[in-house]
Image 1 (cartoon, rainbow, N blue to C red):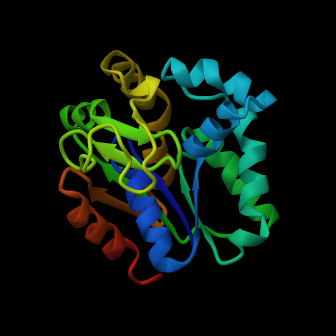
Image 2: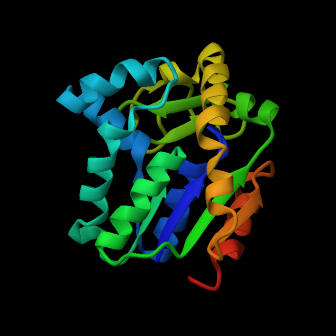
Length: 216
């Protein structure tokens, strides 16, 4: 089973994608996490990507497309994959179609998580990430048991540079310009599903499961 999750920043793609992948046994591929790891390791790709990520802009297609193809054809993705954060624009979606065709893969579901702008800003500006394990929390919706400390590994929590409110506004503008047109690209396909992501995490997850239940 191969799935694409897309939608605006803060819609819950990362949280819901990991949960769904764990349930179905497929590999969750979060482009953002892969790029942030490259930045932390100061790889050539990471150095190039950092200037865009810190400004809340999308990393250029040329930087990400090869990385994605390498990942979805790896052995650990043999049972399927869930893409979160790729494709982010129509050019990437077309490149993904070409990749899948070359490897005789298909997309079983393309799920759009829709959420209101005010809620997106609230979700993103309150996010906290663990420096050690990458697990996420939220100041209001899912705070850690001890302030500043990860429940899972005890690591230090921090706010990502692109989760500052001024950068969030820029990220949403970039989304509207480059990512929103993917709705037109995918909406006519039988695999396409659209779900309301304004609800709580468990309710949104159940809607996601329902959207792909005939494939699980």
